[in-house]
Length: 160
Image (cartoon, rainbow, N blue to C red):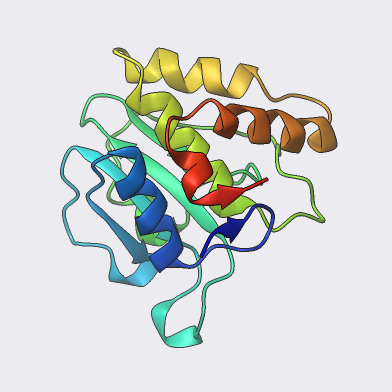
């Protein structure tokens, strides 16, 4: 069964997409279940605590220990549960790119990971990814859909 773009994603659906794209991640966690020490690589984090039920907002982080990168499609700083695990200085996007009426945060995190995964220099990949999305969250959602259409095999999982 295919996943319809625009509906909120579960951790199981996110894992299925990441595996289909051949992207290695270190894990998918609720913010309160993160390992005490994060190793180099990608993490997908739900900002709702594990004991609060199903998640509400997905974010992503790339740990490099020289240049940690945090991504939140709503443009917020990392929660304190995570901030203490990041190397300073770390970078985050301070602007919203997700339309407030959309349930697409999981897709945004996947876009972040796909963009960085294909970049030799992760910081440059992060900056270039963010540059694609500015000023109009409705257009940003459409541009994200276009980005997914270019990912080999993703059409076998996600319908647009």
